[in-house]
Image 1 (cartoon, rainbow, N blue to C red):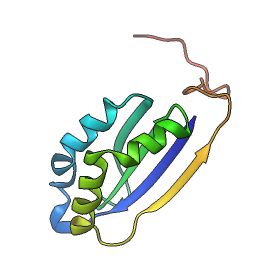
Image 2: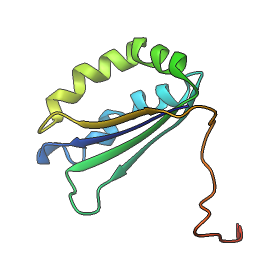
Image 3: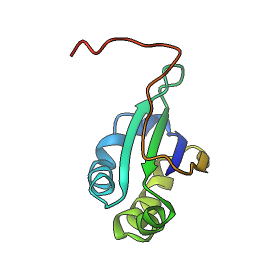
Image 4: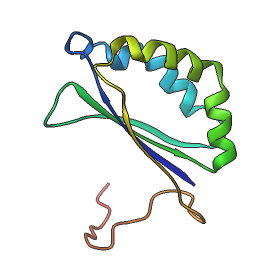
Length: 111
């Protein structure tokens, strides 16, 4: 499994337009074979910072992802709205296929 976490610092004038501008990109990535998740969050301490957590089944799925037209289009669009170069963690985790439950905090499923 490939785990990617990216911090994007957005220009303040694009704060409310970032996610709508990337909606079709987000939906396209989520539909890719080998995509496990693609989830955006807003930093609670900096409203101009978005955090993206991505998971891909393996390196092949990651390679397919960066070769797509929607990825290339997003790489052209994103810089126009960014205040600085994004920060990234990209790591391959062998023998993993997704999330595990947190052992330190076990809660019965109430849903």
